[in-house]
Image (cartoon, rainbow, N blue to C red; front, side, top):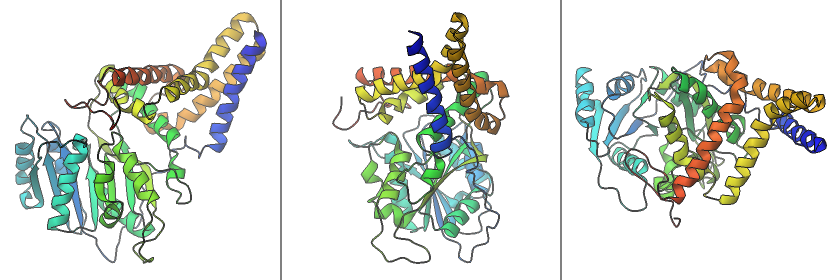
Length: 403
């Protein structure tokens, strides 16, 4: 029995050594939008598309932040009111009028949701169609209604795309992290996302890893047309990563030019200045956010679910258990191995804890945090099997051909 315990904690330790040394340095927070020179010879035109469903409370801040961008080029905002019941469109109009920029805002009333589309993507599709029909912009900025943008954000995004010849630039905006539950769980959400999609690998055109963060995506209009538009991902619940994968995997048939390459390049990084205002006042909304798509991430596979649950236990729960069991039984080799794995885990999590300016002791809490995320993943599968999967803002979705 002691040999089995030792073998298990050794495997956990080896996994952490491999993660820290071989897995794209996912634990680092150095992939950030840092554009020192924003001067551009040509100022591309940009259309901002915002799907908004019952966002009247946040729009006075978030929409204002977009209307007040310092981008010197042409940019126009298309806000799609997705069947809101709280006066979202009226608040948006009032916000623009207060800044004397109502000509810069186009309000679109969303049509009924057709079969085979998720609500957010259908709203975005209508905004994109309107923008490209009227203005034919060089870029589209797809952003959520809860994002407050730094005044230089759009200018830096465009400069990044132009200078590095990128088809897609995306920011994992700074999520709200103020109360106990947010500090406990939100940095870990970004940490786990980076572990799934190491940003260095996403940003390497030689690797197939692709991801984006849906709160802030700047995409070349030509690149979106090249993949067939949002139609190709119309039912994706994890639409941001699906879009990034489509962009990175479909090569252009056009000859290379200064503004376009046959090898699609995308970039994903963190932001400390552009942030989400979406509050998570308790455990419940964070739980719902994770449970909405966790099983989708596993392709609705029971085998992948079992593998994930076992993997989470082995990687995150075994180290502290090894320390406790080894100490209680006097098996100091098991205890020392478990402690070593726990320390490596905490070391990996520490940069994200610092990035979110949380107490450093939270780095040692990753086992209990991971346990909660494991329960959320299991709940995500249960919701799916009960026909409640993918619920968000009053809508429930099922994967095409499933359920």
